[in-house]
Length: 103
Image (cartoon, rainbow, N blue to C red; front, side, top):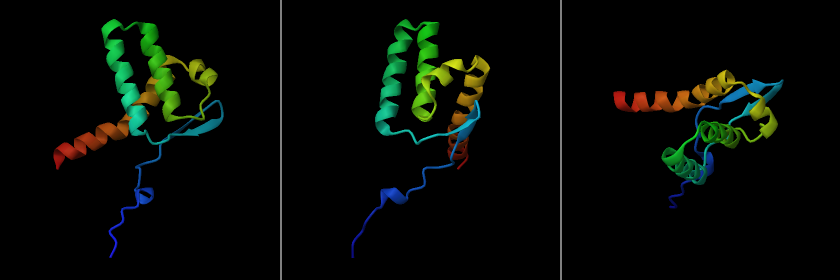
């Protein structure tokens, strides 16, 4: 017998999406490579962080999670919209962490 793990069949979790300017954007799962890239960027920003760097990082993070979102649309969002979107995306992570602690 073969013991085969089919990674293509693993459920990547709840699909997140949002609508902006009439277009619905669906979140793609974060790859390990993209995660490492974002962590390195965050670590380097902590040393000499500016507001512009923080905002640029947020826009890049949103676009990495939602590749159908154009740079111009991402930059056209208000701070409240970006904040709401970040909370929407991070909601599952927080819930999973809380569920893990409750077990």
